[in-house]
Image 1: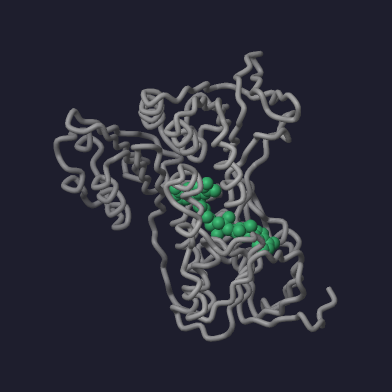
Image 2: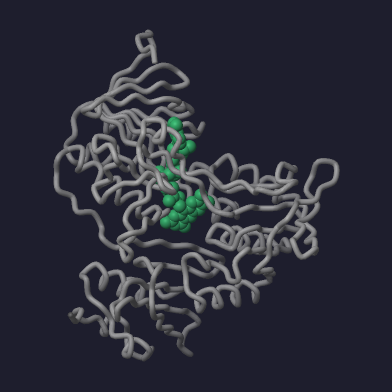
Length: 421
Ligand code: FAD
């Protein structure tokens, strides 16, 4: 690097990435009394915005672009936080104590400390035809604008991927009255994150609303005519007609900068519970990171959620300031799919036993997950009070006896008890 031009800037903390994690870090630093300059640099053209509505209310035209704004621009000015949009950090150099310089598309930035909040990008379809017009991803506002516009003319949609984004997008497409089929590689929807009862419940609800599912299917090719997609060919020879395809097949963490400065990356930038990377002077937060699995000490886990990004932002701010913020100890997540509000507390991955609570009185669902007889997580659909009871129990390191939890007549909060052993 050859820093020294008139365009050079200096800052106390440089935050790479102006998403949920980066913006919350800047605000938490100011909230914690950090005085030097803070510069948040993001490569997207738009000022920081909320990503979750992109696959929900924004796609369904229920909210406008203005409604997506992560914070009022005035707040950044008041808090003396410089947000530079449309600028990419293309190279980094970090010295022994964490200070260094960054090369951007506009010039150089010198910093005392740097935090990587580079997020993730949509995984691309690895099949012939993926470049055809009418094939969409849903990671950023540019994607969502294009998709929303294209949906106005769509007559038949196939969603590839039966994870949260695929199901949310399918629910919106269906609500817009466009026939939609979800194609999933796994045998059931949300197989990576939830239990069979949750998958069955969701499929039944989506099917009764009109969404079709083809599960256990491998996509081999996207067919096209005159440069536009016409269908999705499966490995078993079937072709599903489609003039618009939405691929929601997961996210790839943006770890290139981290790798370039020698940080350990395994499915994300590996961080400890204080958000320190393998270079303890460089912190990383949000969707670009992986950290210790709560139930499997030898494994790593990527928690791609708003709550995790905000939590890590608070922890990293205290790490930089020198304070003691423990952070929120229960990961949680939500997803809205038509009339279904799904709320998840804890991490169920690795569970041994699941207890399902359904009732004649409401159409909701609760699934409690256990490991070694102790509650580790819960999934709730349209059961906000049960979600809160589970989240609070986990936060207090309490449990709910699985043999009592089957009794759906007793409110869950009355069943919370201390752990045994
Ligand atoms: P991001 O929000 O991805 O921000 C990272 C930013 O850094 C991006 O703008 C990226 O372009 C930028 N960047 C990367 N490299 C550079 C560079 N070199 N220089 C400059 N800038 C760079 N979570 C929930 O909890 N509930 C939901 O309902 C939910 N719905 C979602 C729906 C969609 C469509 C998507 C895409 C995500 C959803 N999420 C949801 C996940 C949630 O939005 C993410 O977990 C969260 O946004 C992560 O924040 P982040 O700041 O780590 O990453």
